Image 1 (spheres, one colour):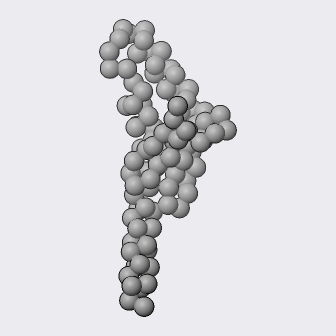
Image 2: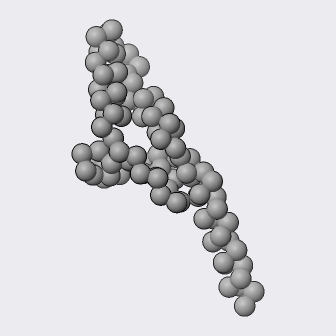
Image 3: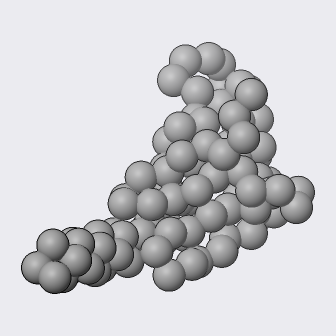
Length: 92
């Protein structure tokens, strides 16, 4: 009985932590921009990258679930966010 109660309490704490720390759309936009912005290159390369990033973010659909979030692009899940982190989904 006590073991079952402890498991339920720990699951509730885990779910609460996931709910409180699920990332937002603004956090995804910042993370994606930083992850895909080129560190080196010419002015033209950086400008082209900014246009591609802006286009991707404009066409991405952000879905907020209760315990996690995910980003759809072209009808497929591209990124999943949980516990304040973003993970690439179906990475090749």
